[in-house]
Image 1 (spheres, rainbow, N blue to C red):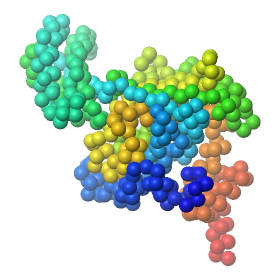
Image 2: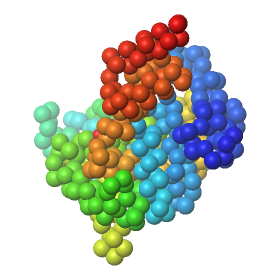
Image 3: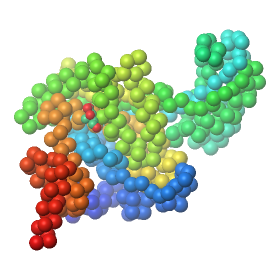
Image 4: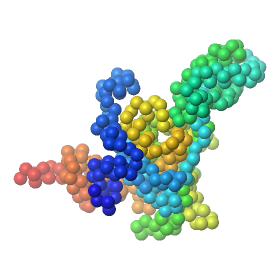
Length: 429
Ligand code: MEV
């Protein structure tokens, strides 16, 4: 293999070989990751219902990530072109400032129990406060393996909602440290286990027993500090790009319409890693957007400032990330297991920090492109390849057609079809 080649210039097989050389993943892992020996129909049939087969999406690797001083190859599953390239680009810019610093809270999940039929909420709360220890120990009995791994029930919180459409409501929050799993099953099992005792203590009726996807005790954060010189781009000076990024950040802080798109860009990166690793991206999505709107107005998940001391561009991100490196699909899906192995996180907390860093890199690349030459130029060259493939071209032919469309600044489905027909004519001639 040509050691001088950049990852994006390599063939698919060269990329697979390199990943094996530079990380602890094996040939079997590569096969699972690339889908050649990944999920089989039998296993799929045990994952969900009414299975008719498997559904494929591309998996790519974002490069250049240095997170807490460690190089990380980031597997991303996504249908949208440019996302993997943009994440790699954002990570490369951040590299010049030492990469990303990332961290996450203890993996504490919130389970909710709705208690109805209480005429005196204050009295019921007092009773629950007295019965807390019993409830916590019952919850612990429902998860002996978690206790062995150092997790388990942590706390019980009581919330009173005196007025609802159906009368007064008491909400019991069971907080559990779920260690390295996402935790939905552990929480739901524990809630169901303690519900009869909660009814006995309060005299009320327990209805819903389910985790909350607003995992605001499980926040992950990442930051980067980028020297202005690393932001220089084409005809734009580093200082100019930095100022433009700050203008773009101010836009996202001031306008909900922009904040939503800003956050969508962040979730491009985050969701792609969640998909690659078999994590519940819907849970993270709903939590992230609720977190972004916690003030009552949707705000950007990331913030960009100029460091008054160094003049560096400072980026930060914070969001709830209820993710697991064990259990669920991460265990049964061979590709997801291999993706987690490739990332090499030692805990779900470390993994959450890495995902936050990917979101920040994704955002940085989008802000830089949007505030300078726009995203269409870079996007179009990748989009052109998709159009060429849709027009029936494959391999080198698809690359040739795409390159021509970009060169001629004429990227469209109809032109791709025209060029494909023209090339076929050439071959038949
Ligand atoms: C496109 O998928 C994502 C962007 O719109 C994000 C953004 O505007 O920041 C480019």
